[in-house]
Image (tube, rainbow, N blue to C red; front, side, top):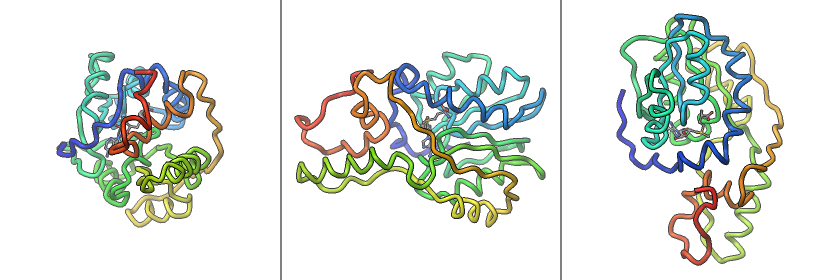
Length: 229
Ligand SMILES: C[S@@+](CC[C@H](N)C(=O)[O-])C[C@H]1O[C@@H](n2cnc3c(N)ncnc32)[C@H](O)[C@@H]1O
């Protein structure tokens, strides 16, 4: 495994579990879909603080969590000392021994630099017949929030921010998967309204946590640090 992209450190791992724990809570049914078996080798790509990695391990699988954020991995290692976690970039990782399954919750849309490379790396990490079970944001995800952000930036006379996500249509992602040699067995595209009840600063906390790169370079008077930090 290699990690050579320090700019991936854009997460507040402490606030993540307290204010944005819904991400892994909503991902729990994905573990059922993965259906990890005792002894299976599973790789959790973009594992964050390791909550779902631990659920996979609890079912008896031999699991490795990879995440681009050293802070997330540090927290995962502290929370789940019996599980293997390493820092690594989805665009640029290799494994010595192949896996039965690659799992990923709410992370692939962050790997926006080169989605083709990410899928190719996943394919390369799998044994023949291995499965890739993942959830990610699709086209139109968080549209109200991103539209509101762009409006606010415009009203403040700021340069339009570059948003960090890759939200493909189902057809586009299926095509990419097939191009890399996967057979698509199930692909669902659905709405998932998400109340921000646990974020004291509501949508502002969401922007600070998930779109922090858009705040870089803004005058400090135009925003304040995350209230959940
Ligand atoms: C919304 S969190 C989801 C974390 C976890 N899967 C969960 O369900 O709670 C997205 C994660 O993707 C990670 N990530 C973003 N870009 C990445 C990349 N290029 N390679 C590996 N991990 C990445 C982030 O550091 C973050 O921990």
